Length: 255
Image (tube, rainbow, N blue to C red):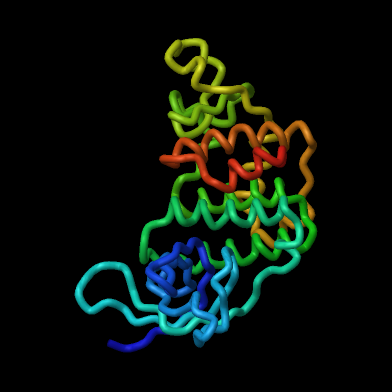
């Protein structure tokens, strides 16, 4: 059984026995992996990291010989803690939101270097002083696109009309539908909400643009609030339970 070294973000940890941890990582080379980190909670341990949430580390692990996805992690060296994110409760909350989304939405050992880079760039974006809420909207849109969950925003999901003048967003339909289909389909009413051209243009611009070109993107307060409500509903639709980070941000009035 050979050792494997890779870069890894900490997504989640929980205590395991007296001194060990069960940890979930998002790695550059293997996607999400799970492992047992022995003796990491022992002050006499040999690890150079305390496995803080969303910290970036270099890990060494041994893959299981006989099935299962719980590997043995034998070395963890801290690369960065993103200290500027940890100094601010709002940024800390949104960074935790990023890692919780990955923990819930990505499959185990389904590699995607693009998702690894998205998390790394998004944490750097937060650390740069950018708006945490805008950073979250960009992260959500980019992640949906990479996971194949991006809602349809240019064509009516019912009649296929392109770029409808008046559009409604439906979580259950996975995108927008036009005014005519809203009028014809009573079953859609109550499950859809109007969406502005400004919100649709922002979604499309973010979807198409590299993240590093979005550092200075601007959005009005009204469109920002609209996107927050719509994307919150869309995220919740794909989750089984409300995320702890979202509850935390709501309690602080930051979400």
